[in-house]
Image (cartoon, rainbow, N blue to C red; front, side, top):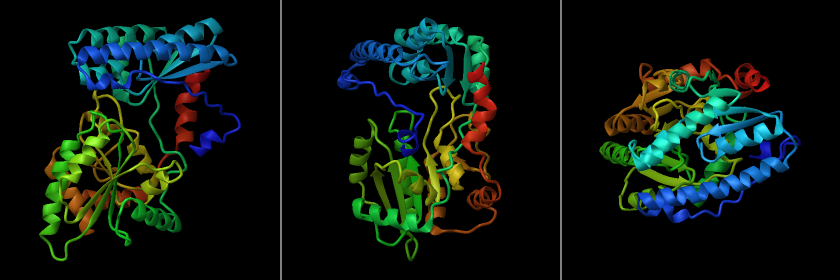
Length: 367
């Protein structure tokens, strides 16, 4: 992001990654072996880089991934006399279990490793109360909860910027020149997002919309890059939507907040591997005052989303299809979760990242 790249007190050190990228296309043994080889190379580069930098007061490392970052970060912090703080966004062993299964030896070994290095850190941050409680019960550590909050760049889009970006998207993604209702779905294209559910919901919504006269139109844009994007694009290409334009789009850092701020609805397909983490994209839409429809994957979601406030939840394709139809139809029902969310978001501006960081994270970093 420009705010990071141009900051006079921020220096970015990029680590090479020439690992065997084909490891995900083979069987389980190939995947595990390829991942282990990749971790060895990453550990070497990470250790060399951290030892070359000036001594740090605090080394802050995000988890996942636990391997090789936690062990390398602990070793460097002890060699150089720095405090080590782990920022828990999820659990590495539950992420690995998506591919390998919970009973796989590699998953169990990763769980033991994660627990071992967690207990050696000097401080901990966690993205949810549920995750902090789990860490306390299972690992015996105390983590301060730091909720994701939107930075200042996430706000309602300035009309001129929205018009300029729509014109750009219309040219690049073959969208209609006239602005239509817009649903934006930020995604990392990973297995913890249910694209089957989305496709089924789109088909149902398209049939409902096509049956009305005149038929409303809807644009659904999925952002980001990742392993499952290509297969999703192929599956969309085999379908003929009459009223819905489905597009995948990579956005430059300056354009992404504008797209978020001009959306009529945010869509979150995230399904937690642990049931304890929270999707960051909800915070982005919250900052822009845009209601979000989120898959109801676990009770932890209630920590950041209440129906009729930040948005609404869905559990199946039918639920999501009804939400999409309401957005496309511009149906105004004051009693609906969508309209109640719009009103609530307007009346309740979001807490910003700086405030949350100063209050919850900074004391942990200072020790």
